[in-house]
Length: 82
Image 1 (cartoon, helix red, strand yellow):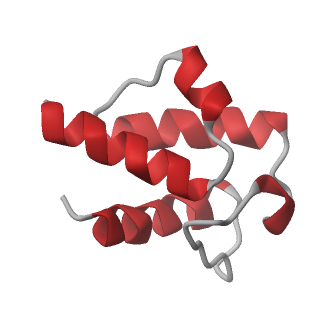
Image 2: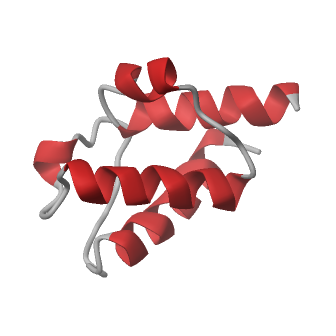
């Protein structure tokens, strides 16, 4: 799956989790850029992303995400090696 497609699908997940249809993700989007992105919604979002893409993140991987692009790259890597 192309990274742009992953980003597009992530946008839909974010809109659902954050209950905000105006969310627009870029590779450099961070928690500071999305209203309501706190530790609780972060956990919910990670669970939804794992379910949607049928991947599992290690805690170390999640803690290493500095922006949405890091998550896109990790999803891409996991899907390519699956």
